Image (tube, rainbow, N blue to C red; front, side, top):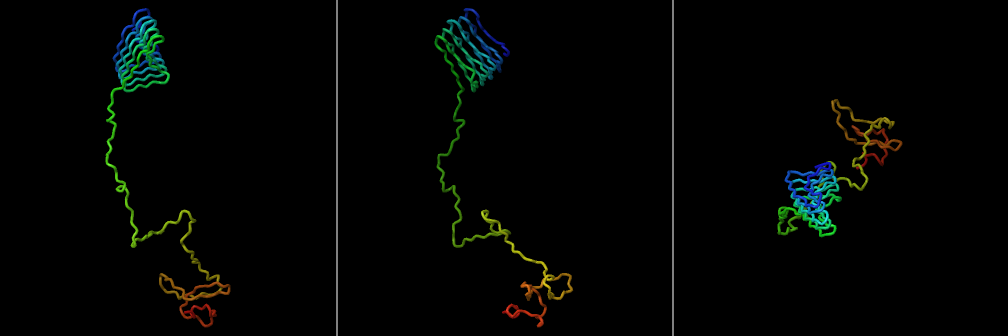
Length: 256
């Protein structure tokens, strides 16, 4: 029922309201839709609603009210889910008589703060509102834990024990990683591989070339001190010539 539509067993005079029972797959009341068993001055009728899904929206109502001295009617609702939203009402109120009783059986009731379920009386005895949830076995959600305590000693893996034969070996190309808290330092040494003979001003004696497609490296076996103080390592194929002057204190041929 929407837009003010309603199903009712009302009495607009002094008589009693009738009784109304609805069995449906779903009941939706929206935009002031109503299901009523009310009377102006008599006994309120009874309402019984049985539907898996019941929704009230937009100021909709389910009422079994009585005016004057009459008692409010009784409302019985059996539904899996009930939504009571947007200032909607389920009432069994009375004025001078006793309020009716409201019995709701549901698995889930969702009501907005502005919606109400009441069974009150302005000058008489209030009615009773009872909301019953189907019984649920709480043991279905329980998990049984073992009563035996866990030995912490069995949960800790023993580390390596120190012995006299223990050793630490760092292998790989980089060895032990650098300390992240210190500046990076290169492990490579600098080597000047340039040929400086053209800047020395003197001829450098070299070993005779071998008629081989591949030249082999020859180890230096002598050295020369230049007037500017620089030292040059050279390779001599024979003993040094007597005509060349070498300081006596630095000639490698005279050192053991």
